[in-house]
Each structure stands twice: as structure tokens, then as C-alpha cells.
Length: 84
Image 1: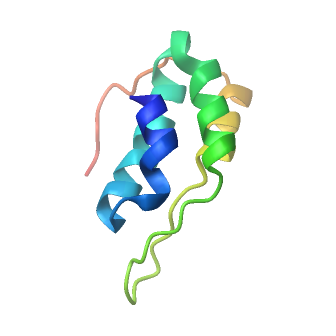
Image 2 (image 1 turned 30 degrees about the vertical axis):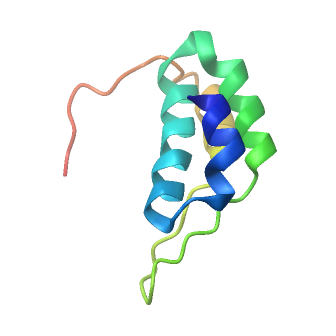
């Protein structure tokens, strides 16, 4: 799936690009065996641009997000609960 994201993310529709970017982040931060591959894909895809309309929402840069999780020692640690 990471290879498919790497090849198709910049040609996909807005919502799909956003979801693909989040998939790369989730794979890199929560599944340690694929950390190196997720980091490589994140660096290759770079910044992902998604049209969010007139909102203040931003798309996270996957490479910096994964790097931050590695520095904090949170790779492979899942949250105990989700707050929505």
C-alpha cells in the first residue's frame, strides 16, 4: 500500500490525498517494522496540497510528523483511548 500511495498521491482527489497522507503517518508511527519504508515514502511525496476550502485546516507533513514521533520515542505505542 505504501508503494501505491507513493505513486498515486499527487494525482488523486482531495479527500483521497488527505487520507493517503494520514495512512503514511499512521503506518510510520504505529507499526515499527514498516517505519523505514514509511519514512522513505514520506520524504519522497513531500508536502501534500489539499484544498480545504475557506477553513483554517492544514495537512500535516508526513516526514516531519513521523520524525517527531521517533524523537519522542512513541513509535509503536498506541493510545489507550480516542477523544473526538
